[in-house]
Image (cartoon, rainbow, N blue to C red; front, side):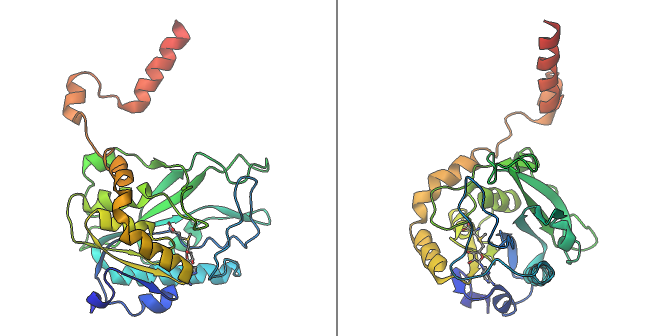
Length: 286
Ligand SMILES: C[S@@+](CC[C@H](N)C(=O)[O-])C[C@H]1O[C@@H](n2cnc3c(N)ncnc32)[C@H](O)[C@@H]1O
């Protein structure tokens, strides 16, 4: 049954589509949903995000309710032991902070980690708050057996730390794409060198997650309601080889140059922070 969806993009509503998928078929997912930014949150450096085929302006309660339903459907279609990476951000509405945790805790997922995506550049450079250069990526996990957190990451992935630094994507006509390196990092960290898994992006937009999955040798399912983005994503997937060098740049960061034991032996068992401190202290006393 999954064959009818594999390696396709379905142009339809996310919930309607997820309800048609069988249980426990997906290995990993990555997505960035619409943020419900009320279509009025433009900054000085960015264009207002307006999707041509969908609204991003719902009453916040309704929006969060939909997100819980989508996340629970993704949970159902994910295999036990599978992971989902959910990109979102903190927002403010009339002075009140709205945090993704407000609805993530209502879902069935184990929240395995909150990753900071440092975009290095702020969208809105007003001074009401310190410039918001970060978004969040929630690593959600579907428990397998009794263990709530499952297997450890291989060190070549774990050393990349909980702060991911990627500049925003600029070479893409979609109004809010993430850079290819982001889903490459997420998928590769979970699946490592295995091939042939199934990756989902339920709000796939320009198809960035699907291109990452294809380059890494996996199958994919994409969903997006906007025809224009689906067509663009399909073109991108046909030409996926053009994006291999970008993916390779990310993969080249997943390497352990020295093992923990080797660092300890050389007296380097101090971590990056301590090294920085040493340099700073030395400067203070020089
Ligand atoms: C933040 S964008 C995703 C961008 C994507 N990560 C990329 O790199 O291009 C969110 C997407 O959700 C889609 N969308 C909005 N409402 C939807 C719905 N109800 N069902 C399916 N897709 C929807 C929009 O068309 C938009 O492309």
